[in-house]
Amino acid sequence: MHSIFPTISRFSVLSHSDHHHLHGGRYNRQTLSLRVPPPLPPHLRNIKTLPLRRNFTISAIDAAQPKINGSIAKSNTLKIAIVGFGNFGQFLAKTLVRQGHTILAHSRTNYSAVAAELGVSFYFNADDLCEEHPDVILLCTSVLSAEKVLRSLPLQRLKRSTLFVDVLSVKEFAKDLFLQIIPSDFDILCTHPMFGPESGKDSWKGLTFVYEKVRIGHDESRVLRCEKFLDAFAKEGCIMKEMTCAEHDQHAAESQFITHTVGRILEKLDLDSTPINTNGYEKLLDLVENTSSDSFDLYYGLFMYNKNAMEQLDRLTVAFEMLKKELAGHLHEVLRKQLFRAREQNFGVLQEPRALLKLPPNGNGHALPSRSDSAIS
Ligand code: NAP
Image (cartoon, rainbow, N blue to C red; front, side, top):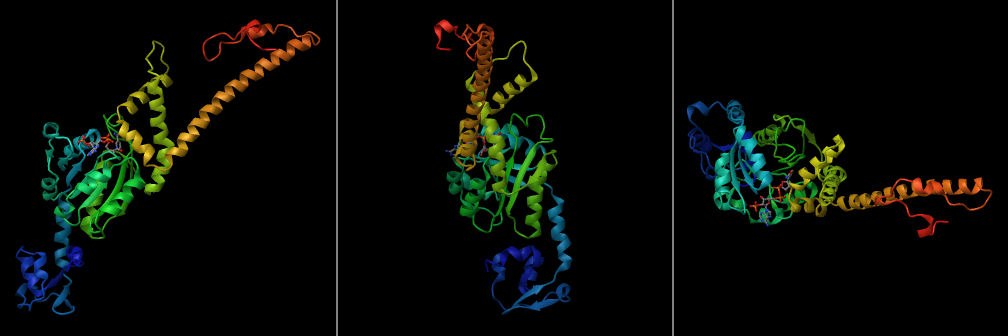
């Protein structure tokens, strides 16, 4: 009984009596019981039927198909439940509400007031949220809390085909988590908008949206629902990139994790704007602002839950050391040349390498020490 349920909207697996219930708008799973069928009503008598075991028949009710498809296509909006209504959840809600979607939200913190301002219905209780039967559960919690939050949801209260979407910045972890926890009846779409409340505050145009359709049922309504969700980003002008979660994590470690790390290093320098900022420096200041407005949990999640992050951190450390060595090596070369030139000019007699004193200050802003206070020879 359970296994044939998902096929109902495509092929209509019906007993004779079910035709009656469907026609009367009272179709439900209980009508698939093994009963002796009453005679078909006259308007259904010409329908081609295929005999099934016992008294089941599969009816080719093609005439009903356009009606079903039509109802899916009619509404372009979805009922979306955002779970985790913090910084990013609220940011997404603004655009989704503007697009006409019905947005519900649930979070650890009570965001009723913020939600009301945004036109979102807030449910402090997860049971109440799930009983609203949203089309989509959009997981927007921190990477670190995702498993705990997902496990705490009363999934049994949801429609059995609900689409689960996440926006976690690490994708292999999110995909594995969904596949482990979400029952196989539910659909799964893993996504990562490569922008946030700072970079996407004015528009999402030209910003990248990564996704992998991990498990979407073949039923037309499920395919359409997934497309509708993706369309919310496509129609804002996002660049839609379909790739596997593994590919995403490799690219993200090389780009996003490096960006956040550099931003956080620069933040520690406490950089100030100067009266002579170059464009490059302005961009660095922007980077610091962008990354520092994200929570540390987010950054830590990028590190902990992306297996490629450690390698990038090591490469960054090695690159910094290499650069320092390159600078020191260059300086050493200049000094050596000057030293030997002075010796040659003086026929092998070691002289004070006068040019040394004209060298630019070193990294500490101090002039190099004169020969008397150093061991240069
Ligand atoms: P975040 O610090 O990564 O996550 C904050 C959210 O996680 C809040 O909704 C918070 O709920 C919830 N949360 C944290 N710890 C929790 C716990 N122990 N139990 C239950 N809920 C907990 O910041 P964010 O910027 O809002 O990001 C949310 C998600 O979006 C993350 O997975 C992040 O990777 C992803 N994302 C963020 C950006 C961005 O630019 N910010 C961009 C793309 C994707 P309460 O507020 O109720 O405490």
